Image (cartoon, rainbow, N blue to C red; front, top):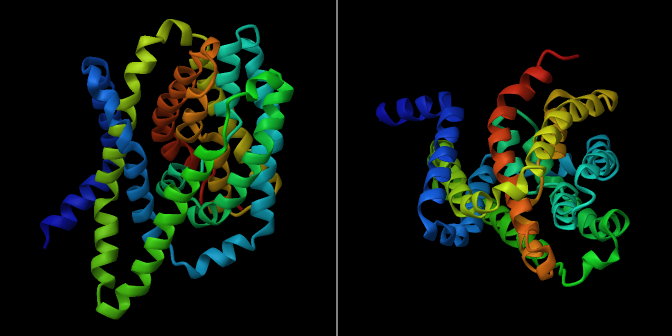
Length: 324
């Protein structure tokens, strides 16, 4: 009995180091084992299970309150769909002369994340319940606005061959189904006296689940990035700068909107994290002349995952609990 809590406390105390280890091992496996890319089929299930466990820790009575927080939702939408596109426009000019790089950067940076951002926000003490409630709005908004932004910034031809199916599938399998299963578990648990077991189990497996998810994502995608590394030399700095800029822009926007600390952290994480795993199928469906686009998208995933392990330490300091 004492061993499990002790191991759990140790894992939570060292979780950032453990996440970096998982990413490093994923990179090594992805670089050395050609078949590692086949782990891609495990990405959605891994994220789905991770989100299910995350949702178990959110009382569903709070979701209605979160959805009614008009100030939070307005700030979230403003940041992701007005401010971020302006920043992306500026950064994308660095690759404006190369179609594949431009399309890849626009495709991934214009779409806010709806899945593992919830987990990282929770680790950093942010209002992850509000991001759960906002997920449908973020999904609908990016479905409607992405074609407009791509047409304006890259030209109408880029939309040929693109479908909305990956967005809808991601929303159903990564948000709706895990959310419904978590709600069902919360409803059943008190009736069969599972409450303590469910709560303890959810907390206890969070760190291992995150490590597994990070490993699967990185190992399955590392080969694609490494194989195209020379062509990605320009976009990787763009992604790094984006993360740095968005930390301050998110915090500043939240301060102007007078959000509470947890909401401010949630907004900042949302502005920085992108929907790379969802837009990857869109990138794979592009014409042959844009064959480098999937690698451009995947490169953002790897940069972002490393960046998020830093964010969970930096953002609580940038937006401290004592802020008034």
